[in-house]
Length: 557
Image (cartoon, rainbow, N blue to C red; front, top):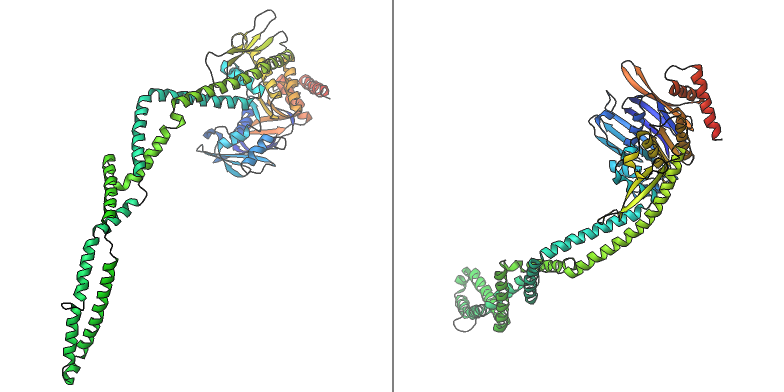
């Protein structure tokens, strides 16, 4: 439940911190005093849209904080734990700047406005004074019944199945229309992929083939040139080695004095003999290792020729054939898969249709039961609200076409007087009757809510006298099982509350401020007297207020 609401520089509030208790809290004050400010601040903490008017005049930002006790709210705790946030307590904070921008935090961690809204749906329910306007739209009636029945999961599953069914129908329709084109594409792809499968060119194989072809094609030329070079170095006649030896021998035969001048040349010639001899051996070794393999060369050149032929056919460079093969294979697999097979897709459409119907029939069964219970409970509440002659029911009628909501529509029907046929609520209820019917429906909805914190914003508009007292009793009864905050103009309702919050507007030094305070018993009597008789309090109105408060409190002890 809500335990604290702190407001800073919001609208015409400078600083305010309110603590909240369980039970029923009445919120009263003169028209324009700022009751809407309180609900507006709470709404912002729960993710409602902010605007520049939220910030108090002359200030840079409004700061709003709402603290909730979530010990009895498993849905809220699960939401927090799923996001690894502390779940012992729940603190929502919203800051709105003068420019209209806002920031949000949950338990001190940055959050989005949608996070506030999602978590807020587990924390509190707000029933507005214009709820009866929603009843005038029949499209809201089915959701009202489904909320009462509490089968949100089943409705969500039904809607998901319906969307899957419609998507499959659309795919089937498109596939049927494009069938000839797809079949032609499939035929071409199968041929192209089969041809590339047969080629079976591996990644990097083209480079290896080209390298091998170059080596094999030039093997004979390399052999001939190596053999010729080896002969040039050879020791046989005509080779370089015998000539070098002759040069060494002749220089060595010179007289000693001249031979000394040629010592360096002799040394170099000796080295040259050794180098040429070594070179000859290396060249002969290389020539003996060269293999002539015309058969392998023919195979490699044939393989390369086939690769280039298929590349030209597909109008791509040979090095892109492997990637092309993968792309065409992927496209073939996609087109040839179940999603594009008419027979399997038709079967999928039929399966989803049958699943939707089974789920829709199960929902219809629970709706029929819930409609009877809902009608009876609302009628019981109407009897409390001085409409005991009225007859209220929920009518379910079949839809002409399948829907995400199921097989039927819902309409709220009422007969204000015995003997009159029940007619749509939108056609027969007067303003006062509609307010009471709306209140009865909201009370029934609240009794079945899993959220124990409820806000009622002037839902008692249009009722008075003894009926107003009954409204207060209904709201107090709801508050006894949780927390109810109700904005009201009716003293009969305010007198029933466990506690009473008063809101007043005060002007100081050209500044208007709103003050809020929980009233003690004397304060409650004074406020009830104001609500009964206006601004001028008399002994008579004070006595009437005291009697009203005492009577309402005695009735609940």
